[in-house]
Image (tube, rainbow, N blue to C red; front, side):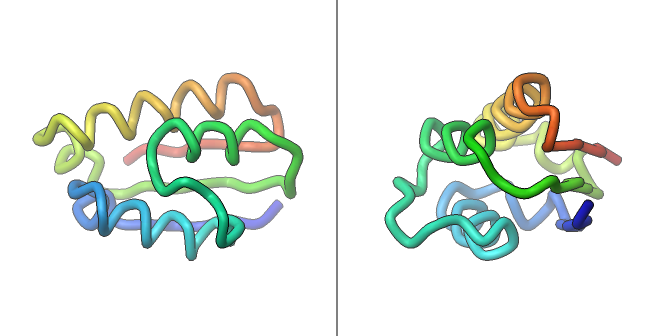
Length: 87
């Protein structure tokens, strides 16, 4: 299983988060760069991934960050190939 580690503080804003997640998770160029599209990509067929987010307290400080965390948790609950670690 591949491990991808990201700093939650860098994911607080929508544009930067979508860019960083797209690159780190190697999402296709055509993905929609929004939370619905992220959920679709994370719950579709793919490679096993462990996503480790440090600094999650920073995500809780913004509305977008809280919504992103919810999408990541929901995606991990639906996809057995996605393991989520929040620090």
